Structure formats: structure tokens, C-alpha cells
Amino acid sequence: MHSLVRSKRAALAAASATFLVAAGAPAAAAQMTPGTPTPGVTPFIAFVPLTGDQLWAVSGVEFTIAPLPGTVSKPVHATYSLNYLQQRGYVDFGQGKITVPVFGLYPNQHNTITVKVDFQDGTNDTMPIDFKTNNYQDPNRIYDRPNVVRRRGASDALGFDFFYMKSQLGSPVIVDSDGQLRWEVPNVPGTMSSTFTNNGFVVAASQSLQLYRAELDGTVSQASTLQSWDGTNFSHSIDNGKYGLAGELDVQQGSQTELRSTATEFDPTSGHDWHEWNLDQIISDYMRSHGDDPTKFVRPQTDWFHMNMVFYDASDDSLVVSSRENFVMKLDYGSGSIKWIFGDPTKYWHTFASLRNISLTLEGGGLVPIGQHSTTIAPDGNLLLFNNGTPSFNEPAGAPAGSKRKYSAVSSYVVDEFHRTVQQAWSFDYGQALRSPLCSSARQVSDGSVLVDYAQADNKQHARLVGLNPGHQVVFDYAYANPGGCNTSWNAQPIALDSMTFQ
Image (cartoon, rainbow, N blue to C red; front, side, top):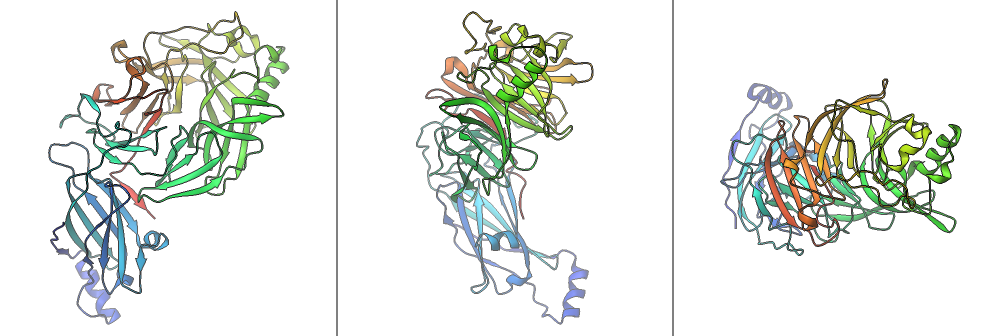
């Protein structure tokens, strides 16, 4: 059931009056009448119908979902242009009807929704709606029942209020900083390879090149199939690239599969593969040209490289690549040439002079990357990564696998490419109390707040989602049961559900 309260606010009244007189229009202001919302595919989604006889006067529609009493996260807020709604089939000029998709609702709650219709004359029509959602039980029995280690307090400042987990159990899952589940939909394949872009999720089906698109209104469609030159499937992360999205591929070469050593950038709509970087070839060519035998290091028959992240750095038109088995490296986007590498000098790679000579040296103390994931260039310009502390698994017999730590950390570095040095800007290790040997992530937002995902915490029993304020103090800590591997949340990222714009 729902109740409606109407209010009308005239903005730019003088300008509006001038427009109406000049156009010879009637003095009555345009307005819309709301109908009963209908539920979406899950209780997190609903559709609010609006009717009126002057749709031509509408410029856009907004909605806001008020936070529940006692919670801290910001209201969910989204703005739709009329053009966007029309393209999505939510405008019927013949019947004078606009349907407003509302997402981010609390399940099994009376949600206070405010719908605002913006008119071209500067006025607007505001409609508060009380909508009771149905109950929701997560089919995985995980995301709707976190163990609250620390709940965000009312005075806890944080630069983000919502985040999504990349789940291998189904669709990506959106949660707010209070630990409330706010979005999940059916019919989306579980996979590590997903990202949020252009106001929707792009999901690559596990062990394939098939791409899906999941909109926040619950619509799921097959978007395209990656037209890779020789890739067989996506292996790990998908993130923003220079022109489209960037990810990692397994590649078939004759009878052999080159595991996790090819990066790609592609158009998720058409599936067109713009560029591929084969690290087997790039590193072999470099080592050979500098006097080393690459066949001792580059071993395509094995998972020798294990690329788990490729991130585009617009500041110098380059790619930051994470090799879990070896190091972090930076490549020139256009040529693929190696700019530098940075990793644990006790690993096998450091025994080769050609690689050692282009490596960065850590100065002033701190942690080198060991078994790292989620390598990005943060908004402050620093290299940021989740520093797992796990040694290599696939080195040749007798070759050094590197150091091992009993805890994991988040590491931020200032890189001086000219002098080939690195300084640790800061590190967060949670008192050395948590270790996540594989997967995991750390993503920073513009104010310096960080979302940390310990994908295999507590002896691999939980995914721990931890929010850090700009001073790197823990603001929240939610533990989700992990049924195995990195299934619950292999990576996680903040998402601005409080300020969405659909054009």
C-alpha cells in the first residue's frame, strides 16, 4: 500500500510567467499524477507510474529513497532525463504516462520515496510515496545476514555510502555502509569478471567470452560476445580502460592454453577487441634483447604469470598490470614496452639481470608487493594495491618462491619513475590481525576513504568488507560467510548510488 502527498514549488516564477504569456499558454502549471508502484524482479526495485497530459513539458524525473531511522548512509538518489526514459521504453506519449524505475529499496520495509518531476519552465512537481516492499531472502543465505564486527556510527565520516561485491554466486551485490543489502537480481551468471559502467553492470560469464548487461532496473540481457583474436575466456577482473573496458584472458595457442598472461581492451556493446597485450611475448622479447634466456622464466605451459588485474593510467597513457606470481609492472599503452616492474626481490624473477635492471627499489622501509591484487592508480596519484603476502605457487622446482607474511595489508606507494625508486606513502594492516591469501581488493575514493575487501579472511571462512576513513581508521567491518574459494566477494568497489544521473 502507499500514501500520496502532493506539493508544488514554483521555481524561477518570473521567468516562467514571461514564458507562458509569450507562448499564449494557459496559466495552469503542468503536473503529473502518481499511481500505485509495482514491484520489480526483487524487492529492491519498483516502478512508479506517473500520468499527465503535458508530457511535452517534462525535462526529467528524479527519485530519492530516505534512509531508515537509525541508519547513517546517504539517501539513494537518481535523476533521469526524459530522453533516457523514452529510449528505455518508459514513456508513453499516447497515454500520457511515464514509468519511473526506482532501485535501492529496503526489503520488507516501508520505504519513503520522493519522486520529483522537473518541467522545462523551471517548476517541479514533488510526490512523496510510502511503499511497503516484500520480504527478501538471499538464496545464498549470505548477503542479507552479515556478521557485524563494527557498524558505522552516526559520527563516522566516510567518502562513500554504497559498495558492490563481485560475487561468483550470482549477480553483483550492492550493500550500503550500514550493512543493508540494497540490490541483487536473478539471472546473472556468477563470475569474477564484472564491473559497473555507464550506470549498469557488465558481466562476463565464467569460462567464456559472453558478455551480459544488468541494469539497475533489473533488466538483464546478453550484450555481446568478445571478438578476441585468440582468447578462450575471461579469467579475472574487468575494469575501465582507455576507450572501453580492460580485462584478462586465457589464450589458446595451438594445443596449448596460455593461462592469465594476456590483457585486452574491448567495447562491451559490440564485443570488438581493440587491443591485446600478450605478456608472454612482451617479456620474452625484452629479456632476449637484454641478454637473458626468456625460456627459463616465461613458461606458457604453466600459470607462470597469473595476471589478475590490468588498470589504465590516463596520467601517462599506460597500463598497470598485476602478476600475482611475480610483480607489478607498467606498460606503455601504445607500444606495450615495459616501463618498470616492482615486486619482492626474493622471488625468482629477480635472478634475471634484464628484469632486475628495470625494477624499482623501495626506499625508506615498508612492504613490497607479494601476491598482490587490485592494483590501481588511486585518485591521489599513488599506486594502490591489496598486499596479500602470499608467495608464488608456480615457480620451477628449486626456484625461490619469495617471502610470506602472516597478515595482509593495503599498500600505497609514491613511484619515482625517473630515479626508479618507490616510497611507501601509507599502509594499513588491521593490527596484523587479518590475512587473505588470495583474491581481495582495496579501492580509494577522492577524499581518501578506502574500501577493503578481505576475500578469504578468518581462515578463508569469511569475506570481510572494511571501510576506512581518510585517516585509515576502521569505520565499518562486515563479515559474510564464504562457502569456498573467493566466491562471496572476490573484489569490491564503492558505487555512488546517492548521486546517479541517467542521460
